[in-house]
Image 1 (cartoon, rainbow, N blue to C red):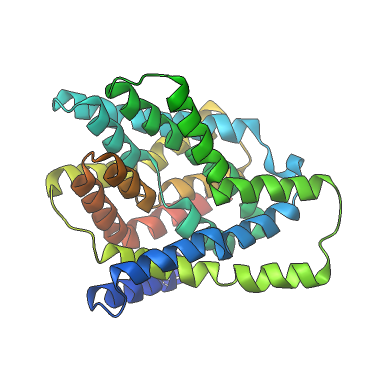
Image 2 (tube, one colour; image 1 turned 90 degrees about the vertical axis):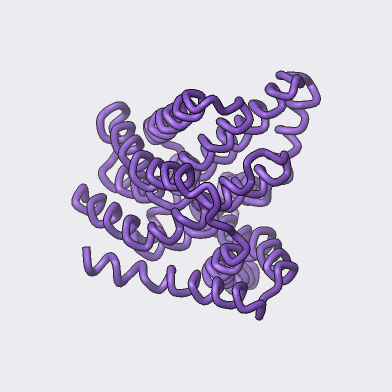
Length: 310
């Protein structure tokens, strides 16, 4: 546990540095937005493309992992939805709360952290986790909110979901990388070096951006945010563990990576979606802030436990 804690500590230290920069206004909100955009579209995309291009589809595609992770995540999603409905929240608010409980910061925090902790073998499972989060759950919240507002499963809603997926650079990077791999064409040395140098900025840039963005988050609705943080940091890894260990067993290594990924704090894009639709943005903001702070302790604990599976 102590070893894992000290190995994850530098990640959270960079997040803390970003938080200081945002809190002291050394980094303004505008600067943070541009840094996040830069990381999202360039270094992170370069890193994901390079990883995917050096893997084959058979190395990544694991139906058991997809179903197990999806089932575990969906279980927590439904629990959070039921709790929200029992508190007499509307469908849109319940969808935002469920998103907080089930979707972690896989892109900005998870991939860099798991690759360093587990090695490059973690890339395949992490890409599947990321793909499920983006394709299934990022689409589901859009469908639910639009359905609550009367649009239902209209052509406009489906078009909105499809365009969102097609414009997501992480999805495009995975697809482009696998397409390159399928062509069995080696990456030219200058191109590989370019991707390695650019992708090298992904980890520090993403972590710094997470911290700087947290500086603008508030801790309102603490009771609800505390429950959602508990669901994300505790219930989600337990649900995924049940999915990948018992429901649809996968290799111990893939199980350890998936469970560790599920332990990550609430993803920042949940707040962006909540703010875009005007649905409980303060709640999402508080859940991101609280879960990120508490995850300094809980993430190493879950990863240490997951390592016992290996």
